[in-house]
Length: 165
Image 1 (tube, helix red, strand yellow):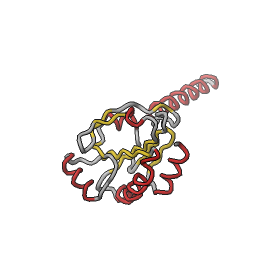
Image 2 (tube, helix red, strand yellow):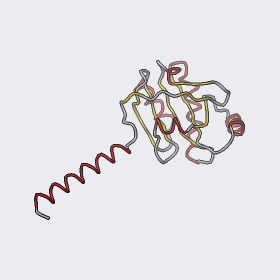
Image 3 (cartoon, one colour):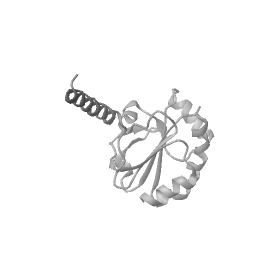
Image 4 (cartoon, one colour):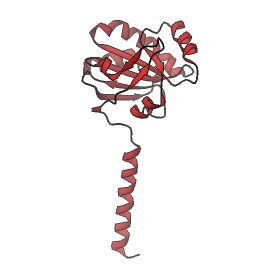
């Protein structure tokens, strides 16, 4: 292959690789949060519009996940302290269990924020990644402002709330 043809082939391969990576990349921060409708464990239908004017932490987790279980007490404490100031948390379980079984688990741990089973549509829309726990922060205007894979502690949650309130 001649040198210009090799350069063109390499350039084309690079462009295709970047395009493929961009197509597979999760939604970027500072983009509008996708709307959703999900039923929580109490049977209430929740949507993004319900959280307008509040800072929403969408937390993807599972009952069998040790880091997920570790962060729950911090989420409970932060929600209890800051809910009146506009903090909202939506726990979306990726467990393969019934809603009734998950509700029993949630009640046994006194979780005070809404929890539901993560529907495939919301996972596809928010693209939390391959690891849990994963938390996505949506600001008061409905813009994704932060993503974190891994457990979040109370101090980090409060700092992020203060930053985006």
